[in-house]
Figure (cartoon, rainbow over the protein chains, first blue to last red):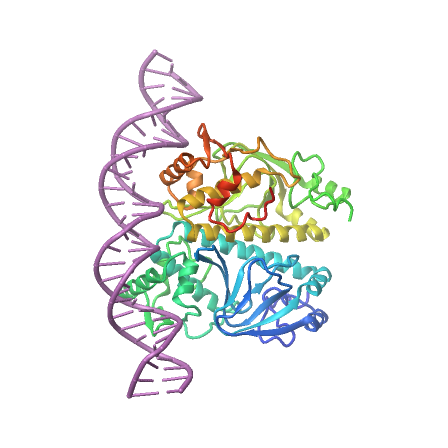
Length: 246
Length: 246
DNA sequence: TGTCCGGGTTGATCTGTATCAATGTGCCGT
DNA sequence: ACGGCACATTGATACAGATCAACCCGGACA
């Protein structure tokens, strides 16, 4: 298969590398995708989709951050997915949003209408194969998060989240976004709390504790320096490094 | 496509209906599957796979219950999946177990060696399509569970688990396993606790509270009667009924 | 028939995190 | 330069659920 050695391949003129859609595509397939794709932008805080309401598009995140949330009427909210550039959102075969989707920063997405996208899937079996791999990766990530939510302490949760964001900042090609050891948090304390199943006060307290213990340094509210990534990993409660090599 | 009207189709002589593998298969495809399948049995408590160790098979649960767990060295354990008859376990393309898999009752599984199964996948695109649907369903379930683990109270968690087991006891063809309103718990209090992110003591206490409040009746340790399923659902903390119709 | 043992329940107490409340901080618009 | 506001930190207290501990129950087995 041509292009197979490149794990990810740019989607024609897409400024980012779609993890699912464009990997392993032939040039004519990229053309076919290009004909049905279109871009959309959202501003920070904007609601993209609401659970239960019609959603007739699927999309790749081009830039910015979005969240998937589930919540109960009394206001309790749980973040169930963090969408970063190259992530895919939307489910082939389903015409209603299953989660609330919100832009937490300014956001650009590359969209496809669901129906023509599904038609293309039938012509490009490797895209469906790739979607299956991604879905299984997401499932593994969700189950890791279940361990975090069910059994980890507040401190371990914070450390795990920071480690996750660092790992996600490292591109699959090995390049690093930004300085090594400096993490730009793409989310507020409230979003962190909703991801971790904690309150913002507990998030804040544990961040200061980690700072006082020398595990992290805070540079402003949103930038975190990690002098020793191994020390951070040791705080996550995980046995292993989650498959990272250093 | 023949057999499409039957949502599930028996895999040749399999005593159960595989949700993924055999749905929508043509007779010759069922034959091909039959040639590479084999059965295995485990006794209650037996370990089937260990995270990180080689696992060269995928399988469907025929009868009995198994669990997927993740745990940390200090003993904290989180159940990340409950495997009931017709569930699929194992990941195409991966040769190591990602979770600990344990039989909690006597168990029969229908196995396929990974490699020939993957080869068949390439010849039967609808099986991969079905696997994608299942993976996405599992992902939705995992995310629902994240809401439970992150934000629900102990009482809501117990009610949610009971509701889940009731729902899973209802076959997709509409038939009900066992009496309506009578649930046979396939798992111990410890397993329940590990699924719900609680301790066994809390599980026990909340079950007695639900009993005293008339939501459930306990008949022995493992059998639960639910006089009013709606009342149970009202205790789960969920807005809706999860797509069930009554 | 006794006792052993895994699983379950119940009680007393402890503790990590939530809750309630006050204060700090940076940024934007005017 | 100055409110005003959203976001964040810090402190005091409350409480749900964990922990520690005792006891119960029923089945296996000598």
